[in-house]
Amino acid sequence: MNRILPNQDRAVFASIALGASLFIKLILKLIMFFKTRSIYEASTFEPEQEALTNIVTLSAIFVIIYLALLIICATTFIMWFRRAYANLHRIGSTFLSYSEGWAAGAWFVPIGNLFLTYRIMNETWIETQDNLKPDSIHKEDNGLTLIGWWWGCWIFYNVVNYLLQAMSGLGYGTARLFSAARMDLIGEIISIPACILAILVIQRLNALEQDMVDPAQTSDPIDHLIA
Image (cartoon, rainbow, N blue to C red; front, side, top):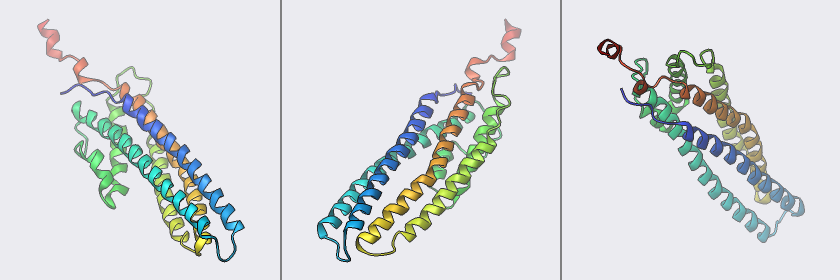
């Protein structure tokens, strides 16, 4: 069996990335909302081309920033998640249903990412808790309810966000852009609980992982007989 790989830094980076992305996206979408509203309220049935150009430019900048943040969040979270599951393989846990690669790959499987990642997260929590040191203060820390709430909020956010994006296509000109900005802001507000719960899951599982028995620090019983 191999030594457990450190995962605390990855947990910190993933938590910071989630929190920072949520904050920055809220600020950007608030800017978009108030910008489009001011132009929409000032415009007539034939809005000025310059006003429309400004909003389109701002929207393009927002999309670029959003995609960059999305990549950072996804990368840091998946790196942490994969190592947490991989460490269970390294200590020889026999009740794991997937290879360590699936902890990363499952996120990219259409439809499957709605339940595979949830199952792997549950397994990670259960198996990590089962391999805690005897004197760990986290022995009775049951986080499966927290994971359930997190995943439920995440699914709810994605469904609602999809519907809001469909509704944002109503109207034309500045009216349509204002509708899109309003729906984006509502969707981002809905994502707040999912983001907070994700950070809590990372922090609590990280606390458990630091108390997990490291096979490289344990000795074989036969060593005591030889000694």
